Image 1 (cartoon, helix red, strand yellow):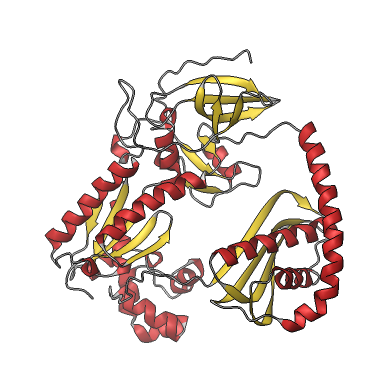
Image 2 (cartoon, rainbow, N blue to C red):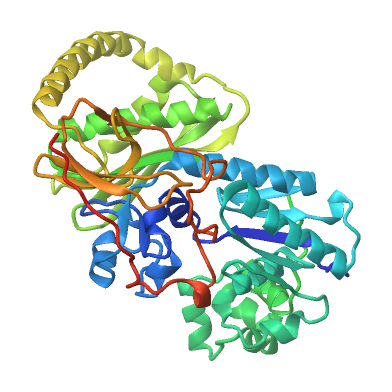
Amino acid sequence: MRPAPTILHLDMDAFFAAAEQAAKPSLRGKPVVVGGVGVRGVVSTASYEARVFGVRSAMPTAQARRLCPNAAYLSPRFTLYRQVSDAVMELLHALSPLVEPLSLDEAFVDLEAGGVPAETAAVRAVGEKLRRDIRSATGLTGSVGLAGAKMLAKIASEAAKPNGLVVIEPGTERELLGPMTVRTLPGVGPATAETLRRAGIHTVAESAEAGEAELVRLLGRAHGAGLYAMALGQDDRPVVAERDAKSISVEDTFEVDLTDRTRVRSEMLRLADRCVQRLRAAGRSGRTVVIKVRNYDFSTLTRSETLRGPTDDPAVIREAAVRLLETVDTTGGVRLLGVGVSGLADFTQEDLFAQLATEREAAEAATAAAVEQAAGERERHEAEEERPRRWYPGLDVVHDEFGAGWVQGSGVGRVTVRFETPWSAPGRVRTFAVEDSALRPGEPLPLVGGAPADGQSSEPAILPKFLSPEPGDTGSVGEEISSR
């Protein structure tokens, strides 16, 4: 354990939802839910105003709508989130060469490696400045935890939410952790917690009192010994600048169950190609192909095959994925498909046996695929001519006359757009035909950099709960129906 709290953990506050509130002035202080908006969608992030109603990440969107029907339900805009994440990560790298990103909005930083004095006052000052810099650069807020270990720094940042900073002084770990539930400790999920509960262990203090031998007996040597050390506040894991990915995968959930075997196979081939694209973009290859099939009844099956050597050859991975699919019964309907590659390496060793076996088939398949693709493109083109354009909630749009805005909703041949920018006052609403030629998709605008309109608040998109406006305080914004 370090003698000073020089490990920093940053966690942006309700990141996706906060970015949407910052980009859309009319949503500030109101419940916002970002995620899949379809019947099978899942909540990715909920704003603090929505969490008051019980909405949580990973919750089905349909359940969230029942809990908070008046929230704004928006599709994710990952282009914007990556832009903001890049700005935040740049600030973190300015503090230290050792930055360990965990996701777009979360990272560990080793301040000691950045030359920050090992003193509480010094690291606190760095943490406070970081919060100010993030607010200035992005318009968003983040919570910071400082401690002598990664586990404790993460616990501290959680305690600091939203928009705060908490320092855990070395020597106070056991006193702090003792009353917390065992689920607080990394690696303790529902199954482990239930095993401990049956043994009468509910808190971190009770885990420490049980002793290492008892935890090993209950959970096995590796897990039990690790849990005992963490219950004592001991965590010597270093901050690692490069986190090596163990696998690369893609998956899709379908709005309607797939029952046509040919369509299932076609979707699996498409996912295999997407997986290869990600694999090559990362400069990696892999030797184990894994498929995932979730049936109509939510039962999930996985199948895997290990190749003779690592590869990034799309033909080899496609063939393996289809071969694995043949072992799965999909007649009842498929809800989700996925393809992944594990056993990653930085080089390729071509699977000659597979290539020789499929060379002739690949040539024949290429001809058939070309014909099928041409037919498919013709069908899609014809369908697109007949089907109205789809405007997803939250999508950036630009209108030739009214400028930049975002989609509030669409249906029955109409699309409703609110015209506002991150630095404007809440904008007016207009409705258009979905095929209006003056309306087109736009690009995300920067969250900071524009001049706020007169009277526009400069408060952050996410405030501590005691400062947030009441959910019912919506203000008054005029609405207008366009004649277009």
